[in-house]
Length: 221
Image (cartoon, rainbow, N blue to C red; front, top):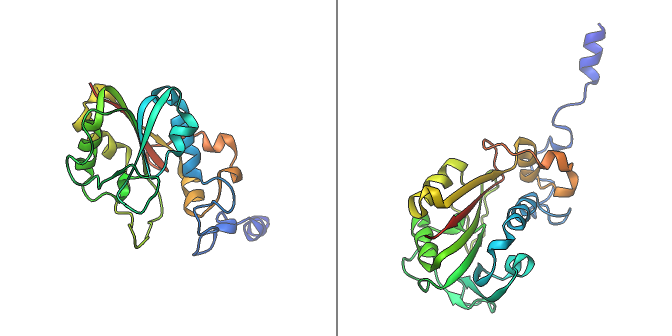
């Protein structure tokens, strides 16, 4: 009888998440910092020493400005010619669209999911790096689909998939792949919760089976 009473009053494991719509429809921005952005900041902060010289970023120079040191110039890449910040208008799916051997660092955050030909895009950014130049890339793992009619997301990625894609182009010795996130932070991110709603210790656990993002540091020989 006591066991039955305990079962009746035991909190349901879903709690407030027992719903078919997210808590936030804006990736968690309206509740704080999105969880994927928290992990992106962690990755780029760890590799801030790579962001120097002549740099390239997509859509705006947000992360180059935030983490760069000794940056001489930052170009901004976008396929949308209406972006006033864009200095290079190009589609990464088209091979040879970037100037060759121009950049010391390319910051490519949450971009490849919108690119039709991912291997071509990786080949393009490698060709645009100078010898010794570094690519810092992040891609979504466990994530909701972005159905923006201007450019919907096409792919999600795994640790093993990224390892294969980038090592094929840059070589295994020049590539480091890391996943960020765990089952709790992935569920929280899908639900629209913000980074501030999880404990630091919960965010600090990383499990390759449940990546919120996958991050790659690749160097051109």
